[in-house]
Image 1 (cartoon, rainbow, N blue to C red):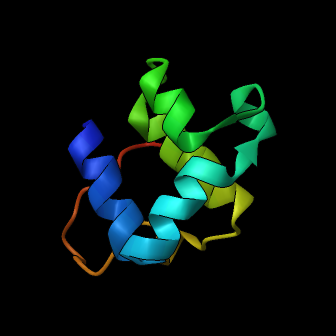
Image 2: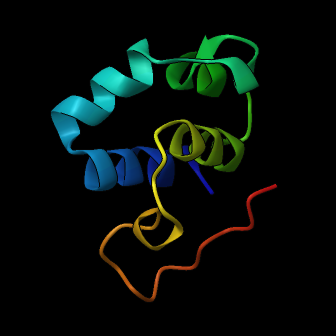
Length: 77
């Protein structure tokens, strides 16, 4: 997963305004108490950050990949 794909999914799954706020404000213990945005900037793989964010927000698997039913879902880890 590329950074662009991560941010596209944030916008699609959470909504642009809420998703961007969530990514910059929600501290995630599984990412060493960083926000998703901080983890991405620190070089953590976007796929890992995405799964941690979705786990923290209890996003079900069927919703994690947005509206495109043919989008390839990368493995969690």
